Amino acid sequence: MSGAAGKLKSRRGVSILMGLLLLLVCAMAGAAALTAAGSNAGRYTHLRQDQQRYLAVASAARLVRDELCAGEYTASATLREIHTYSYAPPNESGGGGYWYEDWDSPHYTLDPVVANGYTGSFGPWLEGHMEELCKAREVPVEWWGLAGMSQPSEPEALKLTGLGVQAEDSGDEALLDQVKWSLEMGQDYTITARFQLEETDRAGNTAAYYATTLTIPARVETKQDIEDESAGSRDVTATTQSVTVTWPAEGAVIRQA
Image (cartoon, rainbow, N blue to C red; front, top):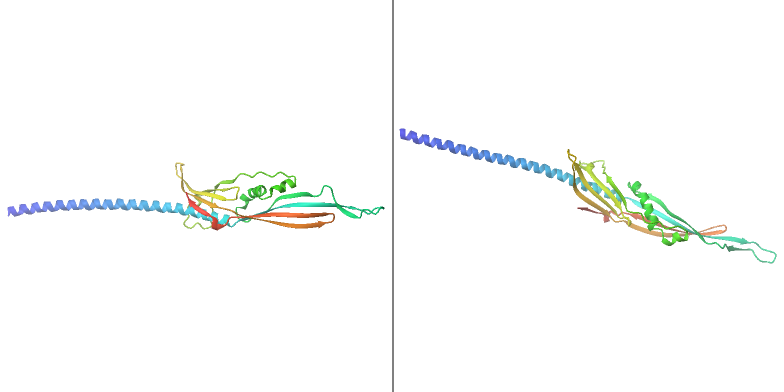
């Protein structure tokens, strides 16, 4: 019996040791699983936050595109060629009784640009610059000389910075108010807007995400109308050149840098 008891005790000790080893293995596996789960949870949170940043910038670019492409700017310049006449009354010798053109006729007047306005919500920002551009680019060069006026130089590109985006219903784009953007319009009326999401941490460090560029080429349509007017001792030929500038949505390109 003593021998059998010794073997039993020996086997029992081995079983306990094996159980402890199995428990250790299970504990290690559980710890690894918990670590992996925590890591995946953190990764998921990061990915979701990153996706929200992307959606916010993309939404801002689309909102601005829709506003700009809804706008239309029209302006016109009118050159008037004025012929004036004087009347020579009949005289005793049988002469006169006719109209003749004055020696200083014709002369010209020029209304450089009469702006009809920008119909989009960005009008207050663009109108002044658009009028300057139209004066420099759309009024025929010879008109300035005829009217005794100097042609203005083309203004530099319009640049607006530090702009924000507002939407009535942001939905999942909770970061939309953190998107900053700038706008530039070149001398060919092409609009370029640049967007990025800016986040500032507690230490005051700012990080930028998803730099995106919106480019909208302009469509420029020009036409001339000629109208003759007669009023008493003068004849007027009014030539009006009008330009309409639009930014078609089909030409807009949104590109992530």
